[in-house]
Amino acid sequence: QVQLVESGGGLVKPGGSLRLSCAASGFTFSDNYMSWIRQAPGRGLEWLAYISTTSGFTKYADSIKGRFTISRDNAKNSLYLQMTSLRVEDTAVYYCARNLVNDYWGQGTLVTVSS
Amino acid sequence: EIVLTQSPGTLSLSPGERVTLSCRTSQSISNNFLAWYHQKPGQAPRLLIRGASSRATGIPDRFSGSGSGTDFTLTISRLEPEDFAVYYCQQYGSSPYTFGQGTKLEIK
Image 1: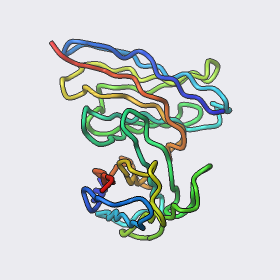
Image 2: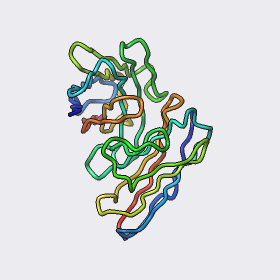
Image 3: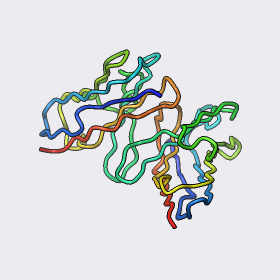
Image 4: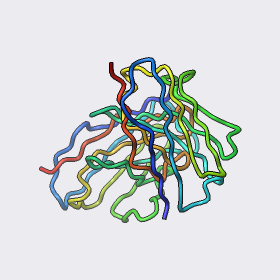
């Protein structure tokens, strides 16, 4: 069955960096676009980015453009989100999801940005 | 950026009732690339409907989606206890792939 498992979240100071990972299994990872979505505590969902199957095409939300980078390693069935210049308002649960329509989601990893 | 507005914000209903949720978009959605999700407390969202009207894998037929252009609806024909959750719509036709603010369906 399709499984997506995020990792790499934690507590980081404002201005710091963090790299999130998403390990995929149960499907042909290299055949699928992948996305990152986040949810601040008690808030709604915010789409962040997607990456095409061969990494040739990426798109970002304005809120993270220039600070976050989405990437993937098809040999390792893994998706990544490199986050830099983190702000307090980046505090959220970060989800990876399969496809542009987000047909499967991981359980999320919590990122807390606080001094 | 396409803005999605969901209504109502909160609905209080009883199991067995029929409910229709609304999602209006600020621009027409290309190819009806409109999805519906629900999210229960402490869980990840789950895809219910894609392409405005196609049920996702494993979703029971009491869930149905309809609409086109800028007006979309999700209907649950008869509420089950497990349906009480927050419902989100999302457009994936034009980047950024924005979500609505959500409708909370609570037990009356």
